[in-house]
Length: 194
Image (cartoon, rainbow, N blue to C red; front, side, top):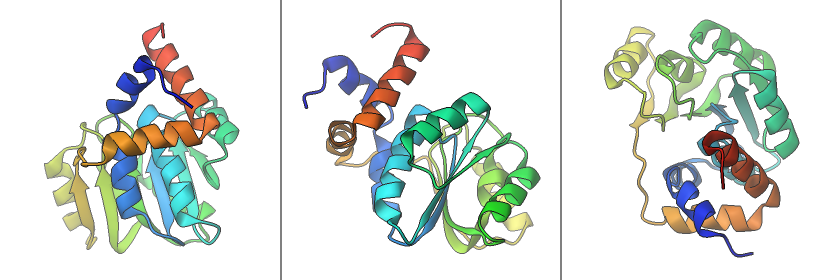
């Protein structure tokens, strides 16, 4: 199915996250996505769902019930948590609750707000990965935060470029009608036109 120019332009703004997600996430892993119902978060959830397969799990965190309905509609997440992504202790408690008391392998932060560093770090197991896609991330808060709680992590800070990102984001839109529908709806809601 052909994409219109408006869809291509809007998708290129967040094209790095599905490409980086495809590189990072492996079969059987447990992945946490902050801001899972944001434009970038939806692509991330879709790529994660494909990658982890039946043996893995995708946990999405959203800010309100409206966003939860968006994720429920897509079916991309195994678990959906409604929580303030700035409240790291509540985020940790909710992730542990819905993951049988276990930490996750990877967290991808698409929340797009400040002060989510510890909510991304705390739920991840030692030697796990935290990918901060959000440009609101503070390098200082992330590094000092992980050190202060003794987390031995791989942290990727805002690497938004991947050589194949345009191909991957367009491929996702072409192969998944649900993703394309929700992406277009979010773009329209955000910009008021299409």
